[in-house]
Length: 265
Image 1 (tube, rainbow, N blue to C red):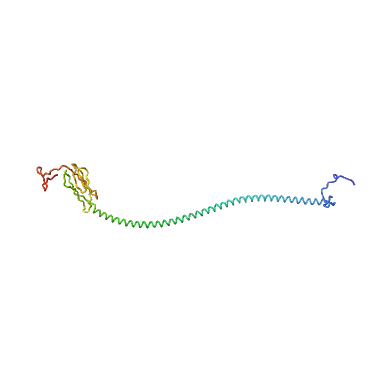
Image 2 (cartoon, rainbow, N blue to C red):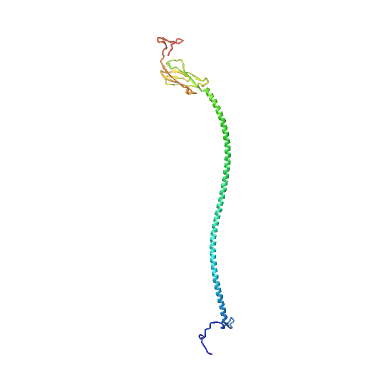
């Protein structure tokens, strides 16, 4: 037998029909068909390739699922924000609705109060109108009574108020004359009140409340006769006070009184 080196052996491209020596788990010498190993290896490679392909597909699907999950999460977040905004809007709307309801209730209460006040005002106005009518009637009655009273007063005044004054007064008095001298007065009508005021201005004559004239000193005085109930009828007189003189009948004859006394001027 010729010995050759392993490196000199021809190269074989298949494992079919080839065996290797070895021991099993029980340490027994066994041979292993390399074709089986090739078949198993090929199958394992095939399965690995399939698994890799399926893993790649699964990875793509997983990536797609991850992206879809991310998009879904983003959409869910946006939906959540919109839901929160919607909830806030709904809460604001509810609060506004509650406030509107409260305002409406307050407005209703105010309207009811206004209606009650209007009813009360109407009742008061009706009462005031009735009172005004009664007051008007009373005023009319009072006016009629006042007119009657006025007519009565005017009638009375027409009787009491003087409408005319006739007065007579001497225009000259003498110093030392002791005879009582009066201003003669007559008021008309006869029913008129006889209230007269006598006033003198100047220092020659004094006049009493009864119209009596008293000469004081030589000179002139004005004497005024004033009816208190109708001062428009007042009259004034100028009186001279001088020394006594003898009244003459003629330039050479003296005039006497019926009792034989000198008639003095």
